[in-house]
Length: 168
Image (cartoon, rainbow, N blue to C red):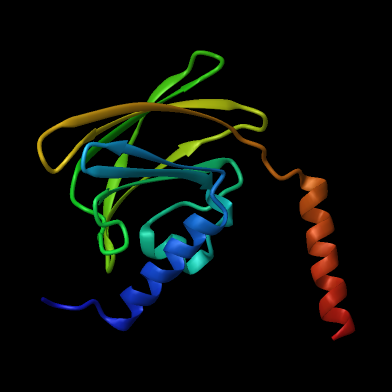
């Protein structure tokens, strides 16, 4: 069994931390002997290096979703398993779109990532279809409201950062 180069291992660890540490929505769906992990976050929360490596556009008006499938019988030992994942997104104003999903191979298995537009205060409803390794299919929906950072908040953050640098 081959191992990933150190840079890829570091990326996998940082990416996992970014997803779990700042996830807006994080849920686990049990489907027989599988656990499907689903999370979303504002893509602006990802570090620049992580986003570049994963091919993800960082922007305050872009969301990121991650889906992974694990063996529910042995969660501590389970790497993310291969699956077929498709996701569509519906918004409260009736817009409907397919979210392009890309598999990303990491040290701890395969993650499925997708990027989508978000608007401040918008409620997005995700329709998730997962074809599991045993050939069965699982469908679930998830609703999430997104809030974007306001320009005034960004200005305050930049001002605080400048003040901290000036006093160091």
